[in-house]
Length: 226
Image (cartoon, rainbow, N blue to C red; front, side):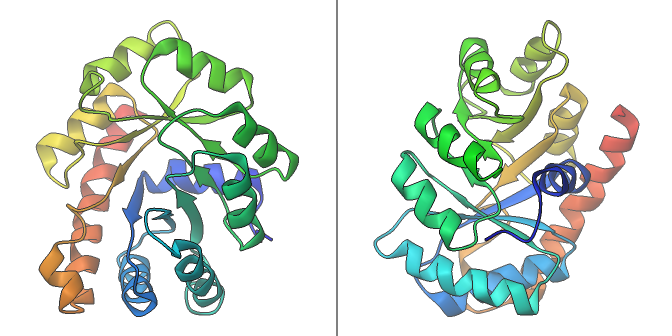
C-alpha cells in the first residue's frame, strides 16, 4: 500500500516536473537506474509494464525503494486494464499511468485514492478523463498529437488542465523550454535519459548527471512560466 497520499504525489509531480519512464527485465538494472535517478534529484519514477514478468521486477523495485530511496514516489506505466492496475497497486504502486484512457482503471484507482494518469490524444478524451477523476492527463504520443502547440491550445479553453507530456521529449534546453512555456505540468522521458550504453555498463553517474541537467533546465523554465 502506498505510503504517499494523492495530494503528495500530484504535488511531487508538479514540483519535480520530470517523470523518468523506464523498463528492464533485470531487477539489478532497475535498481541501479532508480537509485541513479534518485541521486540526480528525481522524486517521481515510472516503471513500465512492458515485458513478461514485469510485475516481479516491479515488486522487487518497490521493496528496494522503500529502504534505499524513501522519498521516491514509484508508479507503474503502460497499464491498459483494471486487473493489472489492481495488481500493481497491491505491490505498492503510488500512481498508475496508461497509454490510453480506460474508465475501469479509473474506478480501481479512485477506490484506493491512487492517481491515474491516462493517455489522451484529444480535448474530448481529456475531458472524459477529468470527469472520471483524473487530475493529471498524459498527452500521448505528445509529438504526434501536436507537440507544445497542442498543449497551449488545450489550456486556452481549459486552463485548469494538468498535462504530462510523454513522447518526443528530450533533455535539451530547446525542447524542454518549449514544453514548459506551453504550460505542461510535467514531462515524461525515457530512452533519452537512459542511454543504452550507460545502462548496460551500470554507469549510474552518467544517468544521475543527465537527470540533474534536465531538472535544472525544467526548473528554470517552470519559474519563468509560473
